[in-house]
Amino acid sequence: KAGVTQTPRYLIKTRGQQVTLSCSPISGHRSVSWYQQTPGQGLQFLFEYFSETQRNKGNFPGRFSGRQFSNSRSEMNVSTLELGDSALYLCASSLIQFADDTEAFFGQGTRLTVV
Amino acid sequence: QKEVEQNSGPLSVPEGAIASLNCTYSDRGSQSFFWYRQYSGKSPELIMFIYSNGDKEDGRFTAQLNKASQYVSLLIRDSQPSDSATYLCAVKKGSYIPTFGRGTSLIVHP
Image (cartoon, rainbow over all chains, first blue to last red):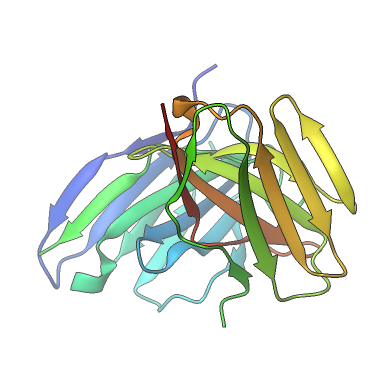
């Protein structure tokens, strides 16, 4: 059974650019959550998608957006990149909504560096 | 004040010893508590979850929850060098998304 796949694994972008990250959940999983991980702030929740609908949203500016497709794959977009957006972006896949008591499986993450 | 607090460490223990990792939380309504392990450069993986006060054991791991004192801990018995990693505590209330602590770095030296 394939795990959670995130692409690309590494990305270097320039300030002001935009970026799109992709996450393919485990087959059959319908919930995808996105997290930003930095040494200073730890793991911070961005948003969760379930059945193509955003169900929960963290405290991030509108430059961060996402969507989910009918096959449960999800994309996250960050516009007008800032140096502070440099982080490891993780997506978590679960069978139903992460907010319920189900186990979430994390992908390997995308390491974004903004220069 | 961050809602979930963990000592960043590193916590250094000798091989074979018991490693004790602690986590405190601020929301008394929190109901579910999770421990994740994250190796350097890897993604977090769930080790254990606990909902009720008391101890929950799984192999060499024991999670302890004390809701009155608002802390949850993870004990690792017979620590091995392969246990060296960052341990993340996550706390959830109802249907809300879990809140993660910043993690404690554990080093098990031979």
